[in-house]
Image (cartoon, rainbow, N blue to C red; front, side):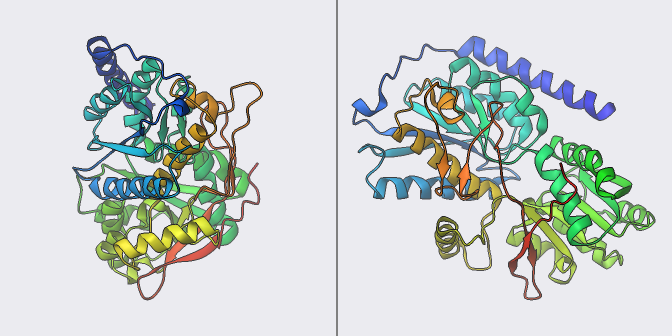
Length: 406
């Protein structure tokens, strides 16, 4: 209850700032009519962290968005029009994100926006985009409640915690054969959502949650007390929800303190920095459940991975926010190619327009055929697993066995 109240209070404070910004900064946006009757560039916004603790995520997102734009333009653009990317730094900050969103909404040349890298930021900016009627696509905001806010201009490509967390539990039970799970999670919307949704399905899977321990991200460096508590719980598997900075330190200290149980985590750990922080030995029993699979045999995934490793080295793999930002840009371009406008872009993508059917088929990293529900969630997906091998390289492990999930 206390966690829920804290989340509600934070959201209300963020919304208060949002409405103040809207009152001061709202401008009339002229109708765009048919976007394909002009030769002006198609301008797409990207809000991501280019400064602060999450800049690594944001810089990869920017690269992916720029790659998508380059590929579209090299192929002739969208119906003969070039695409331009407009990038603004939200610093992964709830105070900065509404300012960035308002700047995009005040610019009538922006067709749609890819935003943001966190659920609390999306919650803070949804009313701004809604008021302006500007479609915003989230590549990394996974908290369940975002799809329940009733906004019509928002959708996400990242899979929600409600859908993803059960796959972590299923992998622990079905793929690894474990039955007693301890959970270590950050005191964030994402962490709380993962815990809530694992607990919701654990009984039906025959997986017992023997304990939960939380921490405050970015403020702690000694996790020995937390790890000692977890060691005493009698678990045979650990769920770790964290970013790569904290996760790398936690995994290193777990290994040093002799807690070498299998660890199930998410794509937030699939960064080279995780290996550098934790050490190769500490990662030999860690498994990251991902919806965007950089090792997929699909041609689009293979091409993306080749370009990514050419840019960043073959020991680095693209993260989920990176890959899904690439997807989001392509979704906007494809909808406009089919005659979507600034005013109906969100409706177009979520198939709310009578007689019109929008499907991203074989042109998304997320999967071969992607559609969206009316609440903005991805309709279907496959969860794959990535791990670190004995050489310290990320390698594919296989798909999640979802037996026991409804």
